[in-house]
Length: 99
Image (cartoon, rainbow, N blue to C red):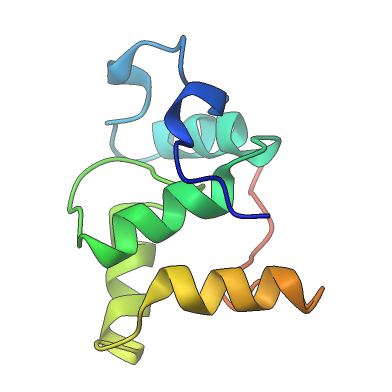
């Protein structure tokens, strides 16, 4: 089920914003925070659909999101990710989090 008001359920809701808007190796720490988040998919869809340029959203860095947007510039990411979830398929953007 898709969560419309996802922010209150986010794993990062109590984190300092500076933890999610980092560069380099620090991004891996931010991605770890996202790894177990119950609304990671909704967060990622929000960032992709709104072309948010900064920070780690839904477990993906700016660079990773830009690559997806280049591959599918006109996609509704909410639709793509919601459909994948409903079909029980792995997310079309899923990748393991580097530790």
